[in-house]
Amino acid sequence: MTKSLHLAFIFLLILPLMSACSANNRQDFPNDPLLKDSDFPTDLLLKDSDLPDRFSRKEFVRVNDIPNANVLAIGFVVQDGSQFPGLRVSHKLAVYADEKSAQTAYLDWEKETFPVDDWKSPDDFHFKPGTSGDLYRFGCMPGYFNGKDFILCRYIQQHKNMLSRILANLDGHVLKLEDVEKTLAELDARLSQAQ
Image 1: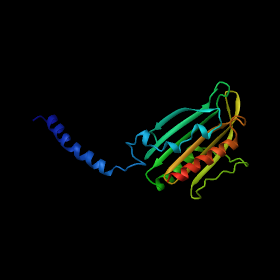
Image 2: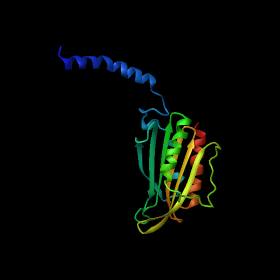
Image 3: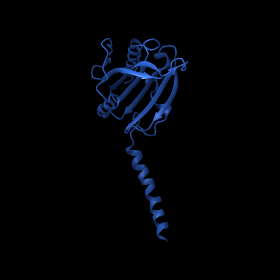
Image 4: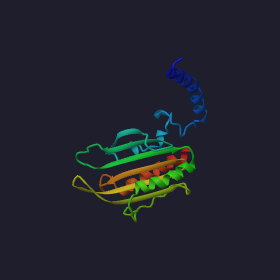
């Protein structure tokens, strides 16, 4: 028997053992790398009905670049985007194996979401998660896109084994701060009921 044929034979013998071991060590949802999108708790993602009427869903994607988590992201734009360029809202939801993993990841998400100290919570923003132990942060700063001024707002929240991040560009007319607060309250209520 040639050396390469011998190695292939050994590999074929070991492969079933390796897959059996990995199957026994694999965790079931909520942090299963083999999780199908249809099994993901999509009811915890932002919905069209959470936003003002002019918004509609633009994209829905599975995100694979966040370690140790199942992540889905969804984006919304104003239906007449040419009239309101830059008006966008996005939501990313990550489900980790346990609460401690989510809390640890929250620190990284916070640094990524708020890379500079210029992100401040407006004085008239009053939303707080319903679960007192949730880690969260909200901040806004002025922005400019396609010749228009915007208020760029970001929100992250850790709830149990989940992390949620909302990015929103507010124009003060179509999308206002009170709309964002209402959206966050509705989303938080669904997160709190989830587990």
